[in-house]
Image 1 (cartoon, rainbow, N blue to C red):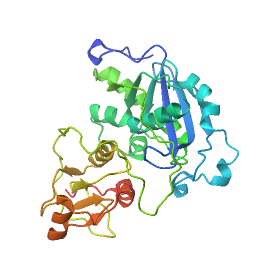
Image 2 (tube, rainbow, N blue to C red; image 1 turned 90 degrees about the vertical axis):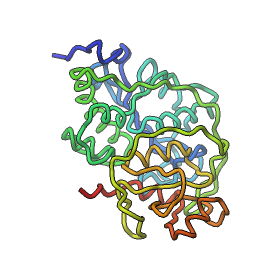
Image 3 (cartoon, helix red, strand yellow; image 1 turned 60 degrees about the horizontal axis):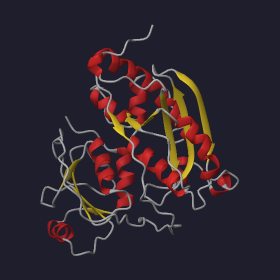
Amino acid sequence: MHARWPAAAGPPPPPGGLAEVDVETTGLARDDRIVSAAVYRLDAQGNVEDHWYTLVNPRRDPGPVWIHGLTSAMLADAPLFEDIAEEFADRLADRVLVAHNAIFDWQMIAREYARAAATAPVRQRLCTIALSKELNLPLPNHKLESLAAHFGVVQQRAHHALDDARVLAEAFRPSLHAAAEGGVRLPLLECRPLTEWSDSAATPRVGYQASYRGGSWRPSRKRPPCPHPNPGRFEDGKPLKQGMRIAFSGDTSVERELLEDRAVEAGLHIATSVSRLTSLLVTNDPDSATSKTVKAKSFGTPVVDEAAFTQLLRDVAPAES
């Protein structure tokens, strides 16, 4: 027997259902491409209807093979995105796109459709990270593996799009039911087509990705205070710890707001300036004369580039009790 959706929880999922999505990519920047995609279609109650998976030839270096396991040879005969765009769209049409860190998957998908001179048929998205926060799930962090473990879902191949989508589908169903039973409003967000994208064949450089230059100014964004105490400075060779104060300086290949969101979700504090309390400065140009890099040098603040920071984000140590 299905739980009825209460009025207090806002509008229920659309009659068309949901599309659990996972994409693996050549990287995190706006000129990176999708190398594989998976969709689990669910009904409005979260029950699986069917699933679909495809490799995609990115027409460039596959990027972090050590993460997704897809080599150039494996992708050489795979279809181009424009070859699978119509079938992908059929899987998404009239459904809410659901993903873990949904803004990333949506942006990668939307940019691929923009390159193909088309628009993804998605109007709303739902992030399972945001939903787990709304449900106050007792998770040590917001990684997919933690969400899966909470609901007893076994991961078989992490960072394989089909298995990640399966894991997410199995963990999302009880989350959806918990929201219905608890009157929790689903954190649905509007999906707007992206018109800014890059089709350049970026030349990879170790520890650096081509900068995102969407304009250096952006409005400030108020974030909730970090719940963890500052454990001090980052030490080379050791993991980041929840509560560390992280500052950013200069252009980043990943949109700054998305990079900051990931840091906050990992339990880190975003610092708008550099002080003696700053744990780490992230910059792709440590020799620049910005106020943050100058202060970091004077205070002896550790500095890493964006690529190193992205790797560190994958394994942030919990705050000390």
